Length: 174
Image 1 (cartoon, rainbow, N blue to C red):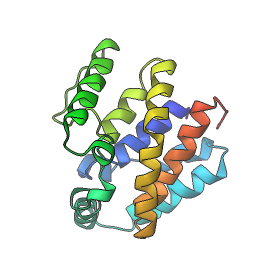
Image 2 (spheres, helix red, strand yellow):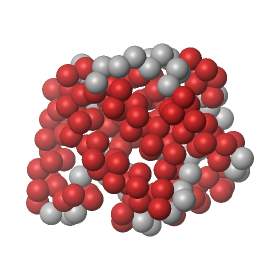
Image 3 (tube, helix red, strand yellow):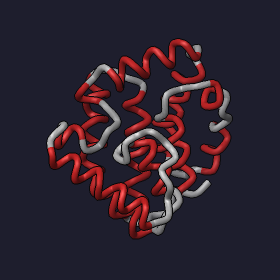
């Protein structure tokens, strides 16, 4: 599994859990990842994920991301709130997606982390690195909030941060 596939996997795991995501067989892919810190963090999240019912996963997801302003998955929100600057940032992201030929088939805003990860898993490396670099601090801030709340999603975001760092530095993970 290459870095882009890991980004896509994390994208799926950060979405609202439904039947398809719940039944996703993603653990075998980790056997190809040499970086133990990534494996440990994704396995920690996997233990929670596999040990929970779909109802519990859904309830926890809503409590973690929908009712927690400090830990939402909209990357421009924590920095810009609902201000005019955020609207400009969202419009810029839409243009980047459009320029790269990525059609937004979702009702989600373009700064929704799972959507951004899906996008960077498919596009030119320069665009991917630019966007991941731009939002890395926001992802780290969310990860710290979740770690302080002992959320299982903290481990998933910690693994994501390590993946991002390796991708930006063009280090080999596999």
